[in-house]
Each structure stands twice: as C-alpha cells, then as structure tokens.
Length: 495
Ligand code: GLN
Image (cartoon, rainbow, N blue to C red; front, side, top):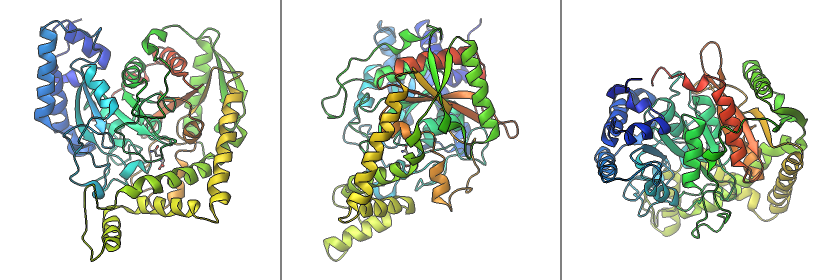
C-alpha cells in the first residue's frame, strides 16, 4: 500500500506511526505538525485543549528526528517521535498545570510527573494541556472553570469526564494518545462516550508522583488510545515502581503487548447480575450482550457472577472520595500556589481565595468531605464507608476465584446532552455507576468500543474488569474482541 498522504498523519495510531517513522516514510515533525494543523482546524469546536505550546512540541519532535537519524529505534524507545497529550492534572515541567481550576490559574509545574518522565524516556513528544472537570470532580467536563469540551461525535453532547479533554482529543484525532486520571471512572467513562480505548490500571501500578491528588486511595493515571495494542504499549511505558510514591507496587511490569494475539480459548468471563439492570439504556444493553456473544464465539466461556455490595458503591465512593478531597484540597489556600485574593487577616485571605478560586462542585465536595470526617459523624459515615469498601473488594476477589475477568457496560447510557444533568448532581454521579466499584476495589479496568447507538450515532463502551495486576488478561480479551470487530476503525465527524 502507498504511504498515507501527509495531511492525515494525525489519524495514525501509535503502532502505525512508529512503523512509518522507522521506515523514514515521514518525520516526527510532520506527525506533530499534522496534529497541530488538525487542532487548528477542529479544536475551536471540540475544545479539548486548554493550551498547546507549539514551539516546544515541534522542538521535541525535531529532537526525536535527530535521534532517529543517529540510529535510535522504537525497540529501545517505543514512543520515539509520537505525540502524547496530557490531562491538566499532570505536572509537565515549565508548562501550566491548573486542574481546570481558577485557584491554580497561572501555576506552572516545577517538575515532571513520573509518568511524564517515563513518556519522555520512551521518546514521546509530550504536549498540550487537556480540559477536564475542575480537580477531576465530574463526569462531563462541564465543571471545568474555563469551558466545556464537546463530544467529537456530536458537538451538542458532552465527552464524559472528568478526563473529557483526553478522550475527545484522541477521538477527534488531535493527538496519537493521551493520559488521564481515574478516581471513579474518569478514564473509562469518557473513553466509552468518545469511542476510544481507556485503561485504569491496578491501584499502585502507575506512580502518582506529579499527579495533583483528588482522592489518594482511589486515583490512578492511565492512557487513552485508538487501539488496544496502543493502550497496552502506553500502559507498559507508564507502569512500574517509583520510590517517590509510597503506594507504588514493586512487582515487575510485564510486556503487555506480548499477551496480544493469544486468543480466548479457555478464558472464563463473568457477567455480573447486578450490572445488567436498572437505568441501563436498551441500546447499550443490546450492544454489550452482542459483545458477550462475540467473546463466546471467540472461545471464552461466560458465567454469571454476583457482586452483592455493588449497589452501595456510589454512596460509599461519595463518602470516601469527598473525605480525601477535603484533605487534599486544603493546600489550595492562597499561600503557596496559584491565585491569592487578599484579606485583612490570614483567615479572610483563605476564605476569599477559596471562595473565588473553587467552583460549585468542588465546594460541594469539600463541604461533604469535611462533614463526613467531623467528630460525631466520622464513625457513622467515613468508618462505615471503609467497611463497605472492604466488602466490595471482597465481592470481586470471590468472583475472580471463578472467572478471569468481568464484562459489563462502561456507562448506563451513551453521551448525554450538555446541560442535561448539571442541575442534578445525583443524576451526574449515577453516570459512574458501573465504573466506581473498580476504584474502590483497587482492581484494573478497561473500556473499549463495542458499537454505536442508531440515531444519533454515538459510541458505546464495553468494560472489562480484572484481578489485581491482571492488566495482561484485559488486554488479551480486548484485543481479541477488537480484532474481530470494526468499531475502532470508525472515525468521528471531527476526525
Ligand atoms: N465522576 C466521578 C466524580 O465526579 C469520578 C471522577 C474521577 O474519576 N476523577 O468523582
């Protein structure tokens, strides 16, 4: 086949782009320039990026071209010359890092997050700041202090959240891959709604050093990608032990791509009884059912499993996540970071700074979190939530005695309209009903495309949940499914 003409280099996936670079069919600069040109064309509508440092991105691409010219290869540096964009919650030295919040307006990162160091060591061109819900609190990017990102499949709809910019940028083909963070579904939910692959690794698999903390016992960083193979590659690059994050796991990182192509013979899948009911859109249910049938036809066996405590997951999450958020966000007080609003004494300065700097949802969470931790309520709410969390993890570990992975919808519906849920926080919280228990249990989860709604045409996501450190199995299942379907080859109108 003849090489892709230059204007569509931004549409390549990581595997294709690295092959072209290796064969000198294009340069890293041309790929980066193609992404920048495409951002110029479509991001006025999609609004995935908060900012892009074009000169820095092109300088990194030129450095990659020089490395390639002097013999560097993708064997040692698997992301050499490939543009990867970052959610506005990850520190990238010298670049803004604002968590889409006014309170961090003007703040620039003094150092690289460990994941950014690892991307750079793998040769990636790391660029851009992607929009998100303020401090990663939300499911639609409507809580961004700056603007709402649009769904590349339908600009009237939200891309999901909180990593909505990360998902939209990949789906709109504005970058070849991106990173986000997932505390209760913030990678998998937007990946599902935008039609890309998103991975939340096992808690502790990826270092959180340089990730602005939301709920430290739940947060994980993970990738968005166009294909399962790319997602496996990115997960491998960013994973591994880091002495700077005390929750980081010491286990060696397997070559996730080595598991691909192994087929599904003998693999046991579970469908959770509790996941296929209540509020589930019929088109989503049918697409997931068809995906399960497809997995069976590929050689997997399927059985029903029970996760009886999952009905408490959303309530448990909103106690634990808000409690941890209220503690983590205490540092944003106008003293060290970002914006300060002066007052006559320190207390008034804190109040004014936080009053002006935080949006409504962040304030709601800080108030809730402070309440559940306060004396007299600690035992009734926080301690009890921790006990339920243990039961939720126990449900999963018991299920994994019988199955290798659990299959479910990623979200109860496809992308909703802007403004549809902003007046009702509970409705917004329920869009994470299938993703939240995975964070509480600390297990890995992946979402990949499994179809579209008919009219309008919107992506539907299939979620795979695995054993602790069972990422390899998730990639193997996801890739077998992907290779037998063509959903991932469909392009959004803004691509
Ligand atoms: N939507 C959930 C929340 O608002 C999850 C967010 C996340 O995973 N960061 O908390």
